[in-house]
Image (cartoon, rainbow, N blue to C red):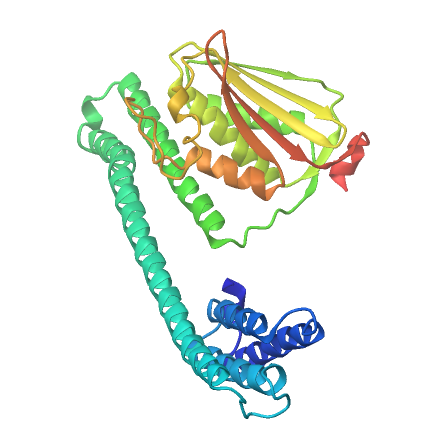
Length: 358
């Protein structure tokens, strides 16, 4: 229905007239089996259906046309606008009134539904805006404050600082900058997804190389968790968007680091099933509350009763990028403790390693 509403007004007239004529032709072929009163009922329903799709003027035209066709072709005497009986005259008059009123009311109801949908969309947009603003006010202010505080110390107390003090302040700036960059990157990625124009740029990708590079980026943030990688070195090359897949892995690993206790174990396993790449990331942390598992991929969603910050964009980006690659991502709690994310992506494979250099 939404696509029909985008049709030009002139084309709506053509479609409404054509639909009434086609239905009338079908009814004419069945006129020997069904009475003209049943045909009038069918035409009335047809006008109601047209009113659910098109604007008011094409619908009113369809109502008038259906009344004239019903009178001319189906009500005795045939092929004339005259009506032989008083009963049929009243029936035709009532048909015309009901068709017009029904068309107008259906169109009015459709407009009210559109207005209600627009109002709901505005309310949701306002709610998301407030959520994002509240998240960013903390998530961006915290690293910025850390950077300002550390640089002030370096500038004002430079002569009083020991080499170790300077090193610690520079490390704090680097850590805050890394966190700030991650938040901005997530916002940019979400804007790409929201635009609806994101298109994967597929090329041959070495999964071993991609995973190790991503883990290195995570470990540069001085994490306490131990990350182990279990990938067959003979895993084939996959033709996919390396940048998008890297963002998927990075956000999953970053999420695991944020929500697992210190010194937890995180394991990455990548396997190939025909032309399907499967990557699992699991940990031995506390897992996710059962009632929240279905919500974690929603935009701006953050786990309840947790001290961990974040804008709630990481896992929604994981879902969006994975689906853009034609795949799917799932989450389950492990019976022995912890959580497991499973990413499956269909992709062309090749065991010719030199292809990635083409």
